[in-house]
Length: 136
Image (cartoon, rainbow, N blue to C red; front, top):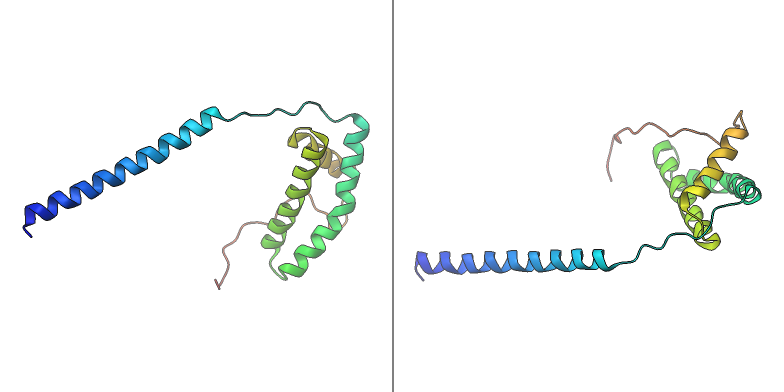
């Protein structure tokens, strides 16, 4: 095989790769443009707002305990795991009640600020992000 033949073959392979990439990108853009964005149909009432904030406050100790058990001694990972638990609960409640996710987060935030001073394990801040001294 000559150098020119090899170069031509690799040029065809590269062109095929770019065509596949362009096709995949075109399909992704077409699907994004054709998708429907469903807007929630209502807002939380004042009673629901208060009730959801209190429900989250009651569930928070369980989420914190589970995070402490899963990541002992690593406060950043504990907060991250807690946030994932809270987010899952918020998404579920928002879907169940057909309200925007921001409404549920606002209910939690309002309750958190109203119940000052916060007693451990509750807190209204995040642990600073620090690199770990080792990686498994």
